Length: 458
Image (cartoon, rainbow, N blue to C red; front, side):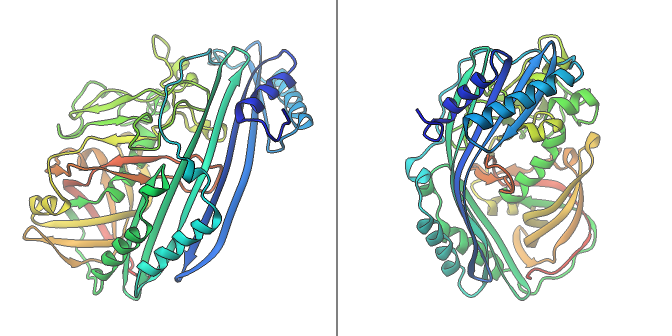
């Protein structure tokens, strides 16, 4: 079999052969994708990508060296094997390196669709055109993208795992003078993405934002759509739901595991095996994914681990299959499939009725974690912020600045909707590995507004 015709796992095996008996692990990350971007209701910057990234790690007496390439050939593999071997020889010993993962039973997951994998550029462009047409009188900004990602991990321990994953994402910002609205839809099968419906949702929201008024800074009850809730949870979780934050004392969960931290309505798991999300079978160390209970009825239960942080924690702690790609490994393990249990509200409108007087938020933007130990996140609302009066969504508001203690936000929750939405959390700026949060809309008794920002629109 030629190198170019080989599967991702075949390529990983060829890399191990190039290591000539060294203790080694190879990761092959391959994608074929297209992205049709549009702005001002015109398609521009269409992008087609075919790329393979190959990384090898070599270990000698606890010393680990790595090297990578996107050249796929016998000579390229021999070159990175030599570089990784030389790097291992000159590296200091890593006290938390426990060897490469042994063979493990990789779970069978969904997450692959033939039609999505083969979707031609013409159909990707047609999705973008459908978004533009359905946005109507507003200018359309955003993109449609779909792709196939293949991940393979193999090691001289006998480990061998591979998975093919597909995804499709439609994202639309409908905007004009003094108006803007936002919507998106994500799935692993393109037929589950209705691009025109996404655009209509964005346009309907934009049409309601004309004539936005300011709001006095204060703490308000709030309803957050799944777009906003997913972003808030992702930023909080990046620092508090991972083992590294727990070890370094920067996580809100430090000294709180087993304690009630949120409203009893809040239960959160990280579940990459859930077919409603973007299923993943194993991580970038080749460790099978596990479902991890993070919060159970308001009680902090656990965090996610990779092999290095688990070794550092000691005892019976083991990886839960949450190692990131090597370029992000310094951030430690993170939950890439946070899932919040739904509630009992039949609709977002019912949450608005429960809040009665407060604010309604479609989307959050420019988020930053300012105090990870206390779970404090700052940012702005965008593209659909409204006043709630008398249990109904009322006048539109300008974009609001906020600083929120996420534990306070989740401490008193009047309700969550009984359905959930998959929200894309991927920026599409690097190698394709799409992930997202599965969350309902939520009502909170406290959302701290600190100021006002720009008006809706461009």
